Length: 138
Image 1 (tube, rainbow, N blue to C red):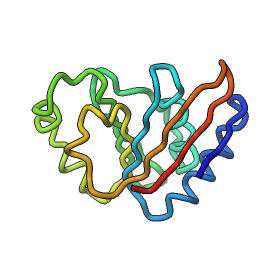
Image 2 (image 1 turned 90 degrees about the horizontal axis):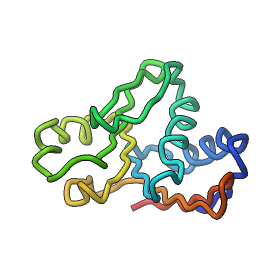
Image 3 (image 1 turned 45 degrees about the horizontal axis):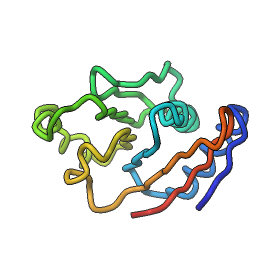
């Protein structure tokens, strides 16, 4: 599935389309260059799932937890990890295999640890305000 998002105004509609496409998928990985909008898209997805608190990037904490109308969402940012041991140290398995939704930024840092099935969202930025999203089930 491919989506074109024109500015921030199009994010809520894109989030709804992604969630509808995901169906029962619980693991979402986000790929894109620094500044492509991974965290911004995750904020829109979390809002669409019922999160009312402020969603921020877990760059330093590695994982943030949010309440989505009684369901749990885990948001990971693996950008700063130096090796796989750091993912083991935070107990990644308990999160990835919990049955809860996981949003994972910089998944290439933990590629060998990813579950067998997930939704991959590739973000490219043709200009400052628009984003192209390529969504595929793996």
